Image (cartoon, rainbow, N blue to C red):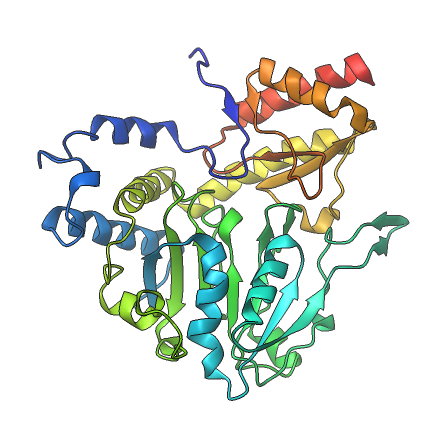
Length: 381
């Protein structure tokens, strides 16, 4: 097959499976004989009800969660959830306590937003450098050990961002019940912003109270935010919480309390079906490990490129890297675009480069990137 489209390494909105795009194109004018595009459907009509209910069922199958969790399709992205979460959950604590683990830009933004609604505290942070095994890793490039966290037993929840898209730091495991008990907070549920590695691997919900994720990384297009929420945590919204953001209302109406992002839910549903056809999250994780190992393996043998993240927490989804000479950055990006490799510029807050290799990025695309990295090093190293 001749590659006609460039490889898209954008951090989000990101690459979607071509099979999903092709099906959406084929169904654009007429969904399943309805005579309507999904964008034209009533969100309460039978056609969209079927689409939304199937998407929820398929997502439940992928995640392995039962009816003890509500699965919601909301709007506003993970950034809106930074406010919606405390507005719904911080009232569980008499003193409006909530604790946050800060490991990068997104968890820090979540913490700052929560200050508007209660009394959040920092449970752990990686804002200082880490000296490990003779090497120094800068701030926001590692994760503090769980036994060093300080969690208040009075906290309504403990929040963490399990994959920092900008910094490329990923939690490979979340604290389990035994670890939370050892911290003196056995009843404090985890709230996880999993946006940029959601659906990239199986996830353990045994001690998770809530998980949320913007869809525009692995789950679909921008516009829909997935919330997976333990039902016993619902019903504590602050009086200031808008009714459209009250989890109780959204759960009762099966994500259709108000008009949801219908087309984004439809595309996300197609992505869920594509993932099931690949063999589910266990199989997609194997593919993601293969891609990440290939790319990090190349970087580790090169003296020209450097990955700033501690090896134990390197993200499989977002791979930041720098060149030996930052003066070559623009030449690198220009050459990459000419080679059909797009969106490799790092986030403006950290600079350098970043390759996001989400589920829909095949190994072929990663190998094309490695070929270019090798060529550029030979030319400029």
